[in-house]
Image 1: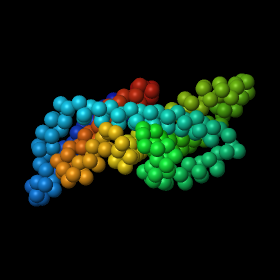
Image 2 (image 1 turned 90 degrees about the vertical axis):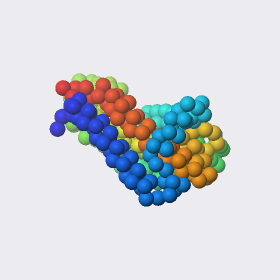
Image 3 (image 1 turned 120 degrees about the horizontal axis):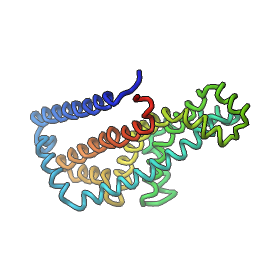
Image 4 (image 1 turned 30 degrees about the horizontal axis):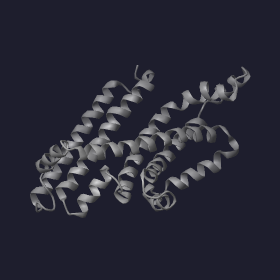
Length: 256
């Protein structure tokens, strides 16, 4: 079925409904549990409003977005390159795909101790963990899409004397773009979870994950729920507003 802008509007409405349902069950839980275990929704919203007026909140948000952008961007670039290489070179296709499938089964957070030992405390281990989380679904999506390119198109391009670079640009890349966009959205979910988890463990400077971990350490449940709310809403905004808009622009022909 062809996607249309109305589908995008329906998706956004679905997100709004989902958030409303989650908040409702949160409030129901708050009615039955002590306030120090589960704060009311409005209490967390008030805390969030106060946080929005503090510079510390924006410092942590900026740090997290910078790490996400660096790791996610590097993963997309590396995933596209390796996916195209693996999809077009028969000699490395099978072992490379097997390696990706094996490695992507390892939770991103499991890499944190290794990268901490190799790189020390700082932004770099968090960025690399984010990149690892986003790389594998991107590379696998591109590789699968490259393998499915029509053989007749490849043969026609070769007959016309197209170079390998021209074939990548004119044949393979347009064909893999839809799968790349889908893989990029899936990769974002992995990258986001990896970011928050890594920040909770490393936590050397301000960030969304560190703020959540600190609230838990001091048993500030209002802070915990406020941070969870911020993390969830930000993820929905990035996915449904930014990534969906990019998807629509790149795949506009599918919406006609």
